Length: 258
Image (cartoon, rainbow, N blue to C red):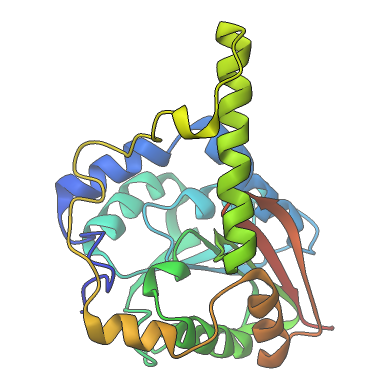
């Protein structure tokens, strides 16, 4: 199994996994994930089959199982500590769940995954492979796992182009300036605003990409919204859209005709 190429995440370290889960497993996050379940184009009473790619400790699987009481979930992940957490947390759903461990950085990751599925879902997972060419390939590898009439729903980080990224950072500064004015009644120059704090603890305490990784990244199209939607269409999906865009993340939906 390969390490995260960013060097940012250590998914095989139990303490890191526990801290990560504690930072994301809240009701606000769960409400966002329910949007994924609600976009699956099937009646809640149907016995659908769902694949959760990079499913971690099971937050997406859980909301799908709640919304579709007859659903069967295959939860895939790279990290054994994450899969251990998922087995414990999804134990109440009994034989409605199964688990597969494989590495998205490998083109062989779909071996052992028995498709097709009525829905393939994912959240904050695929961007971790880092390389745009690999993300594009994963979309191609997911397509045959989706049954006709099914969908692929991906809530993930989305790269910005240079100008759009600059505008996004400027918007964050402007919002901070507005909040500061509401607290103090004083309009401050953008240059005087304090730097945004990073996350403390074990998060983001690892290394950086290698020179070879950086060269591979820059050699390919970035994983912007426009490019990802095009990659999904090129993979074979009949209709693609972005249902939610919030800062650096977005919920992309890709659908196969029935």
